[in-house]
Length: 113
Length: 115
Image (cartoon, rainbow over all chains, first blue to last red; front, side, top):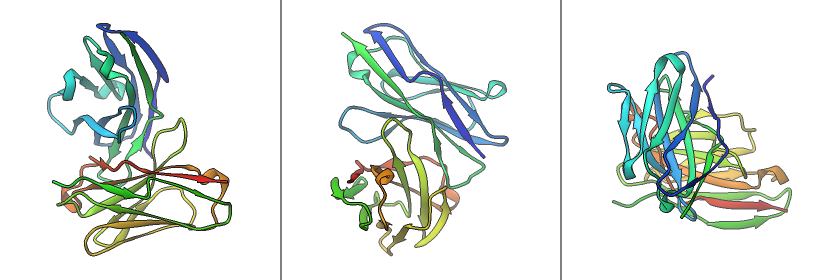
């Protein structure tokens, strides 16, 4: 069975601060990894994804994530957050080509101007 | 390119009633997945439909059922509603078969309140 753990439930940052959101997954085989974002009043949308290759992946709006296989982690980073990054962020894993995508419980990010 | 659309956006039902939620997939996508997102939780996988057949199911009871139509749109039916069924129901489409990667394209969701 696959599972995802997000360590931070609520993060508050000032604009221009750096962001790192933790994500650890549990699955014994090959995985596809995702970060989704849900801005206030909007639907869930893909921020970035990792299938294979370079473990450092870049997404939209300056976000990036690093896949560390030995740590089963896929942490999300952004060097300098903006007020418009206020949203809820979900890490997700799809293992072994199965239909199910497992999501973490989400991290609410609040950026203070 | 038309995105995923869901209806209705909000609805209120009472315990014991039945509800049908509808979803139109993004053009070019033949796979539809349904997720339940309770307050403060991440989306939980209900089931997936591919080529009009159920193609995987999460830990939800049989009173949660679905359909997929030849145009790849889908319905989620929930019978004998319980208070705990109150949640945001998300539909997501994706390319299916060998092209399925787990990348999901979500609709806005249908918020169900059970009183």
